[in-house]
Image 1 (cartoon, rainbow, N blue to C red):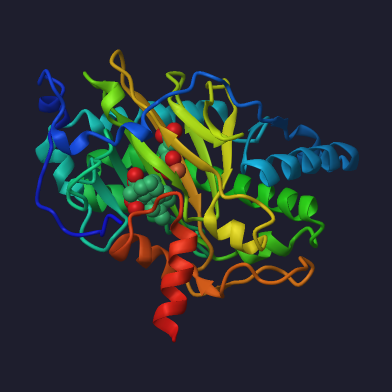
Image 2 (image 1 turned 90 degrees about the horizontal axis):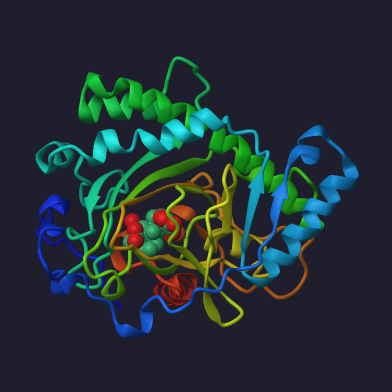
Length: 358
Ligand SMILES: C=C1C[C@]23C[C@H]1CC[C@H]2[C@]1(C)CCC[C@@](C)(C(=O)O)[C@H]1[C@@H]3C(=O)O
Ligand SMILES: O=C(O)CCC(=O)C(=O)O
Ligand SMILES: [Fe+2]
C-alpha cells in the first residue's frame, strides 16, 4: 500500500521529455501495462428526451444506465446541455496554465493535506509509480450569494488577475457540470427504483472537485501510465476528454479502450455512489495511458456530497448493508493522508474505519 507522504521531489515536464529514458519513479509494474485495443461497448445516451420530460425516453435512458452501472459503472451522454463552445474553451484554456514555466505553476502548488492546486506527477506525495501527468485541481460549490464565484476567486487569488478570464471559464464550466450531475442523479434514482429526487436532494450544498489533467507526450509510453488503475472515491465523475484517446475501463475481465466520442461526456460511478446504491452499482475501474506522439488533456468533475452528510443507501434499496456509514470527509482524508486511491479503496477504507472504530 503506497502510503501518502510528503516528498520534496519536483519534476519539470519540459525537461523530462528531453531525456531518452523516463526516470525510474515513473515505471509501473508490467502487470499494469496497456494491453488491450478492444473497445468497450458502453451506451452513449442521448439526454434530449429526459430534459424535455419525455417519460418513455427517460425510462429508456434509465434502463441503459442500470445495465451499464450493474456491469462496469460507465456510460456516456450526448445532448447533455453543456454548451459546446464552453466545453471546448474549458479544454483549450488548460494550456494557458500548463504551458507556463514551472516556476509560475508552482505558485499554485498543492499544499499538504489540500486537494486544491498544481501537482506534477504527484511527486510531492508518492515516490514510485508516478503518473505521467500534471494536474490542477480546485473546488466548486453552489453559492447562495450570486456575487460569490469560488472558482474565479481561486484563479485570481492563486495565479493573479491575468487569470481572471480562465477563472470565469471554469466557473461557468463547473456550474454546467453541477447542473448535469444533478440531472444524472435523477436518472440514477429512476434506474434504481428510488424516489426521483432522492439523490439529487442528497447532493444539495455539495462541495465538488474540478480537476484538469495534462498528459505530456512520453518517450517510453509503455513503461508508465498517465493515471494508474483506480476507482474514483467520489460519487460521480463527468469527464471531458480531448480527441487523443487514452482512457481505458476494466470490464469483462480486461482493459478496454474508450475512443473519444465528439461532443459526448463520459460518466462514471465512484466509490461513494457505489455505497449509496448499497453495492448494486459498480464503481468504475479505469486508468489512462499515454503516448509518444502528442499531449492529452481531460477535465474531470468529481461530484461530492456535503462533507459531513452520512453516506447511507436509501431504505428502498433492500438487502444487508455492504458498507458502514461514513462521511465523504472521512473517505477523502483517507485518500489524502493514509492511502493512495486504487481499485480497492472503498474496501480498504471500510476495513480501516471498522478497525479504528473498535
Ligand atoms: C478524491 C480524489 C482523489 C483523486 C482525485 C479525486 C478522485 C480521483 C482520485 C485519483 C485520480 C485516483 C487515482 C490516484 C490519484 C492519486 C491520482 O492519480 O490523481 C487520485 C486523486 C488524488 O488523490 O489526488
Ligand atoms: O484522463 C482520463 O481519461 C482519466 C482521468 C481520471 O480517471 C481521473 O482524473 O480520475
Ligand atoms: Fe478517475
